[in-house]
Length: 372
Image (cartoon, rainbow, N blue to C red; front, side):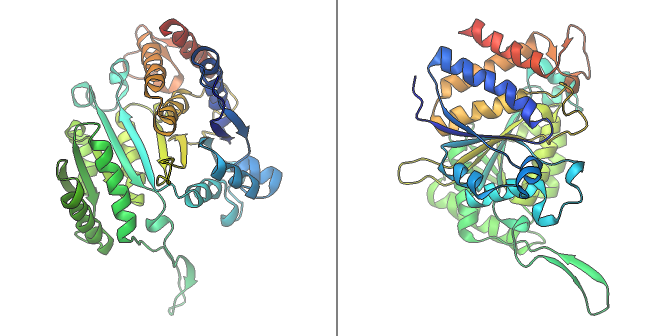
């Protein structure tokens, strides 16, 4: 068994440890049945780290992340830490990971499984067969721009401010990821910004167009304002394939796209850095759902998004596409067989079986056994 792949596991808060436990079952299965092993370290992040170390991410955990071939992340946050100082909020741990690992490209697929087409809030004919990829720039923009803060203005009124900023290099590198990925899909990219009202939007459109002309003219490129795209994702989402956009708009649009599939509990994500001299990229994989503190510890959480994040890790960090396909097929077959966690029990539930977190994880492992 190959075991020179270094994996850092950060379960985090809320339902994070529960869904991560189910993925650990699949990791063990892969080791036994497919000879895919990992040297695994596990550490704390978010509120769990804050409780023990008075910081949402220790320097030691950050060092482990930088040295790992991949980081598998759960979730952070919850009302328990609402009163924590802003600099120590659980979410600051995740932001530090993204920034110091320079994970600038966030890949968020939105795929509708045939078995769950009725779970979407949109009509089945609008979402059936949907399979899009939103690429969100992750380490710049308004979430990181300076200056930012609060002050009292000349009129004596408190005001808050954040700065939206982008460099040419930051725009071009995330657009390059979009073009490269599009070549492996339907060969078309939609770049989205607000060039009608924002200087950063103008620069974004200019640089996406230049890069396209210089290196990717074989890929079809279109542009759309972010607000118009928000509307079109609800009207005709299957018109799109790869969408690339900035940090703020990507945050909003990817969450909107996730609801086309029926549940946040289904969708994974990958956050990738630039390739080094050997082609290795720093990478972090996480479900897009939050820590869901209202159901934490109750065995109700859906582990599919965390499972599919693991599949993305196999595909993008370790070039194990066939094994990633196997995990994804197992998930799809379990859904076809009618297994549903509570978040998926919407629409037509005839022929379904309600299960909890562990039962869903066990069903996926059992299906892997059958497929293998």
